[in-house]
Amino acid sequence: MTFPIKSNLPQPTRVYRVGLLVDAAELRGCVDMNLLAEVRKLFAPVLAGFVPDPAQVPDYLDMIKPAANADHGDYQANFAMRLAKVQGKKPPELAKAVVAALPPNDVFESVTVAGPGFINLKLKADWLAAQVRAMAADARLGVAPAESPRKYVIDYSGPNVAKPLHVGHLRSTIIGDALVRLLRFLGHEVIGDNHLGDWGTQFGILLYGYKNHRDEAAFHADPVRELARLYILVRGLFKKEDDEDDEATADDPVKEACRLETAKLHAGDPENVALWKQFMPACLEMLRPIYDRIGVKIDHALGESFYNPMLPGVVEDMLAKGIAVESHGAVVIPNAKGVIPKTEEEQQKEEPPALIRKRDGAYTYTTTDLATIKYRTETWCPNTMLYVVDTRQALHFKTIFAQARRWGYEATEFQHVMFGSILGEDRKPFQTRKGGVAELGDLIDMAVQLALKKYEESYADRKAHGHDVPELTDDVKRDIAEAVGIGAVKYADLSGNRTSDYIFSYDKMLATEGNTGTYMQYAYARCRAIFRKGQIDETRFRTTPPAIVVTHPAERALCLQLLKFEETLQSAATEYLPHYVTGYLWDLAKTFSGLFENCPVLTAETPELRDSRLLLVDLTGRVIHKALDLLGIRTVERM
Image (tube, rainbow, N blue to C red; front, side):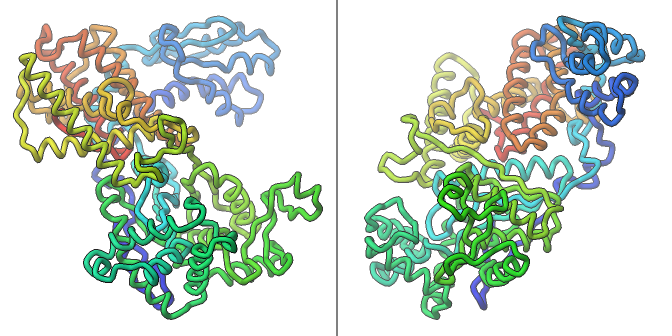
């Protein structure tokens, strides 16, 4: 990620790197392997004859889902109970009538009615095998691009640039990056925007620190390190070290001095603006190495300073349109319901309004966010704006989105993609051993060091037990540790529902068993090891794939799981929930283990069966590789 700076009135330069991940060559010959869509397609014309309004058919089709219990089948249709009420029939009776109306097809092995009207569906093994063979020959692994692509703007990461990235930025950055990758792979246009905090209170802290506590020689030698030191030093002088509230500074002389430095910057004070311009390259350089290391590239870096010249116009326009009102010298906008509480009783019942201009003429985050919506809408014309920001900002975005729609931006869909907190093992906000919020660089260093240690221990143990383990160079070992350590941190964050808090534990993250990034990377490496051991070129399994021969339940189970790849990605994209992908990977890895344990590959009974199983192994590796890549996680060939 790059952040070049230019300024008349200070503002970061835009960095354009927008594009789709789907190119023309990749689209040629792509196939659609959405099993759920195929099953629903078979029921659609049948249901049209049972529902009173054909427009309601999709609602009923949504009630066809993967079976919760594999013993009952592969998919289950649960619409009979609801439809029976409309038809005035008993659910089992209606379910049997729907089943009887299904036309002959090559998809279902069995369609049975159970209990109060559930329709259990089992797919034919030979049909599954044919779909897997086609999937193997497809560069997109059976995932068709969207028929009606949308344009998204995704706001994520958004650190304050005057201080090092800390663990609090981890979730927004990783979740946002995963959504960008996923939506682009599905054929949508995605614009990533890093809404940098480059104009706020934190710069007042740096300005005060620079003027009163700087080490001139240290600043010239390494401005990045010296600014980081100054920020920590000045924050430590606050009466409440964790408080950056610029509204409550009267009883804290250092904080008050920092607030005044910020006010001078915003007022255009020549000295402070000049220092701001001098600080910015070093501040941005604090961020670049971390973004590079975790493999995150964001298309734009438009910080608060970029929108600063637009703020007066936002307030004037909202006043002119009657959306904002003056109140006790300030300007406010209503809450999400369009209400500005006036009486004490209303204030207790209603959500508060939001300030867009303070009594002293200063503007707020709310004003900046409204300017951002205006700019993004008029510049990029997106269908949807996603804000990957923690749950504590829920009320803020609820108000912002409501007022943006009143302001005239009702054609754009706004979504707050909220997430919970990272907790330590004491279930309190995660901190370093030294106390304070953990810096992201330190966290990553520790994960990589532990990954290298575990690799060395595993290597020594396997060698002691007589296993054939390759001698790797130190550089290769470090690269493996980097991929595994960072992958473990990312996967742990993405593997739970983003709305929940999660406990940060290196031991759990780096475990080689269970639903961890390390285990998924190991599953991929195991796929690759089979081809190395057999000295087999995998190319032909992708260009002219052999027929799939299903002789064991483990082979059928793996075929079915591989073919659920597209429906999983679609669900994850629709609900903005990356943990659907990690859940799929966990099921795929377990299913692959079943094949590995029950079905010899290199020593299969016949050449045809050997080729069939090699294709399944290669395709499993390819799907794991792609799914991890969509989560921003690297794979390694050996572990």
